[in-house]
Length: 356
Ligand SMILES: Nc1ncnc2c1ncn2[C@@H]1O[C@H](COP(=O)(O)OP(=O)(O)OP(=O)(O)O)[C@@H](O)[C@H]1O
Ligand SMILES: [Mg+2]
Image (cartoon, rainbow, N blue to C red; front, top):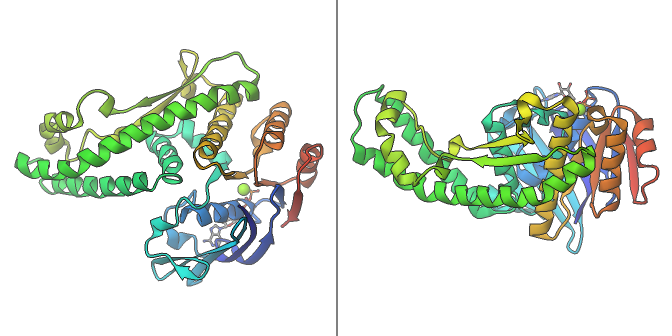
């Protein structure tokens, strides 16, 4: 299945825009600020019912307009039209003109892998960025994960609201335990799935990184979680006192992190710019392979300003990788039309070019 046509109304700076895509390599070029990244984000929105960059839907609406719409026509065994509209604080998703009862019924139909310069936060930002990476990877293929994550987040919010409202005073342990009863089963499931995800991701990641960087260093990814350290229920109970005085929940999967390394050293501190960029691209291509191994379908690969990020040789190795080894539909943005042209010229695939 591939995206054959994308139509936008009042989506960020795109007042009205219709674009056709082929099932191979699609390039979008144009000057800074014309809205290239926004188009990739619209495709991400179609698949995930949210923006990759901005979780506040009202800010996605074009300034001073009342709504936005993203519409996608997908070609495949069964042609499918997806329409997402946001208006008056409400999001509606339609598949072939029929409204989905719940947003989450839609997630998982299409997978997207987004590589953008903003991903530098995955390495240099805080742990929340890395949890988001795990969550986005798992939510796109596993509805139970998505449901559990949403239950966990709600229970955590309520527990934290209680702790805060008591301003450090004593809280009946039975009351806290009633919140824990929701955190424990959902937290355990999320923990198991994140662990399994990282194991699978690693099996793809190391080879891709080595291929891309032609380096000899040994890249590592370690999943860190308080739940690796003991039984979740006990960990929660043992921190009641601490939670009361800190006025928030101190253990749980909301404290998980991924630790990236090269050899024995943390990437964040010791990685060169090029090493960090290669690491991120390899991570995303590993995510691609992971999706593909689970769904047996090609995700849509969104490459934002990829040539700004890496040197010529690395760029060519990336193109060689995505061009030959079984990647499906690719959307790629660049400010320079000639640069993408040169890079993709030798690749034998369907190609379509839009200059915005
Ligand atoms: N809600 C909105 N309403 C109107 N414009 C918006 C909205 N949100 C973002 N924009 C604008 O969209 C413009 C295009 O952004 P985008 O990042 O897609 O450009 P780009 O073509 O990728 O540029 P670059 O080459 O610099 O990466 C920006 O100027 C931004 O201010
Ligand atoms: Mg951009």
